[in-house]
Length: 174
Length: 248
Image (tube, each protein chain N blue to C red):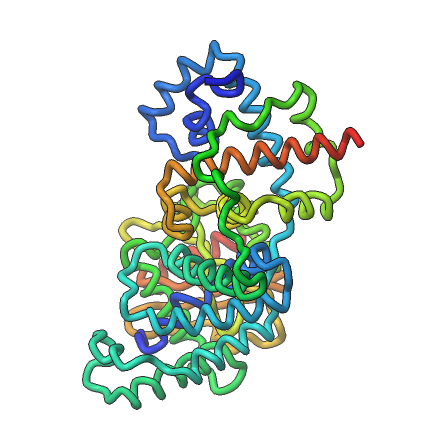
C-alpha cells in the first residue's frame, strides 16, 4: 500500500465530522468551512506526532481548538470560556422539572426547533453533546477532544441534556 | 444531595450511554430497580436522546473536500516529517511533492490510481490492528442503521452466517472521492470485505481481479456497485458473492 497518502487516509474520512463540529461551534457554514480548512492544514503539520489511537478524536481535537480560535477572534476578548462557575456548578444546581416536562421534546416534530435549542446551549455543553450524540464519541474520546477529565465530560453531558429538555418544556408552556 | 440526584445519576447516564462495564451495570441495576429518582432521570435522558436524533448533522460539501485537498497539498509537510518512516530517504522537498501528488490523486477525479489497487490497499490497511471496524455487530439490523446518517445512500446489509460467512460489522472508507460503506465478514481465519457505493455509470472495476495475493470480485445491482475483497482463494470469494447475491 502507498503510505505516502497516509495523512489523507487518516484525516479525510473525518471531513464530515470535522465540518459538523465546526458548524455547530461557529453557527455559520462559511465560518465552519474556513475553520475546517485551517484545521486540516494544522493537522498535516502535527501529523508526524500522531501516534495512532482514535484518528477521529485527534482530528476533532484540532478542529475544536481551531474553532475556538475563530470564535475568540470574532468576539474579541469576551469569549467563549464557560460562564463563571460553570465548571464548579454542580449538577444539582439545575432545578427539577415537573414530571410532564420530559415528554415535551418527544412531542416536538420541529427539526429547526431542536437545532435552535442546541444552538442556545453554552458552548462547552453544546460541544460535549454534539460529540456524544452526533459523532458518537466515547467519554474518553470526548475528554481528549475537549481537554477535560472524564468526570467533567459526564457532568457536562448531564447538564446539556437536562437543559435541553427544560428549554423544550419552557417553549411548550409559552 | 438534592432531590434530583440519588448519587447514582452519572452512573445511570453512563449506563445508558453504554459506558459501564458488566460489573458496573450489575451494581447499578440493584439500586436502580428501587429508585424513583433514577426512574425519573432515566426518562429525562431518554427524552433528550430521542430529541437529539432529529438534530441536524451538517455535512461537508464536495467543494470543501476539494479545497481541503488543495490546501493540504499546497502546504506540504513540515521539516520534521523527515523523521517519519514512510518518507525516510526522500528529501524534504521530494516528500512534500509526493504527498501533495498522492492527496490530489486520492481526491480529485483525474489521474487516479487504478481502483483495484485502491480497494486492496484499503483492505490491507483495514486489517491492521484497530482499523477494521467502526461498528462491531453480528446483527444486520444494528449495522444497517449505523450507516444511516453517515452516508448519502443506504447500503444493503445481509448476514450470511448460515452460509459460513458471518457478518462481523462495518466501517466507512473513502474510495476515489467518495465515502463508501464496507461490510466486514469473517470466513474461517479470513476476512472478506464488501465495499458498497452508488453506481454511477461504469465503475471501472473489472469483474475479477487479483493484486498481491488478494482477489477482487465486482458487480453492480440495483444501482449499487459492489466489490468483494479478500485473501481467500478465488473459489471461496466466488461462493461468498454468489451467496450474498442470493441472500435476502
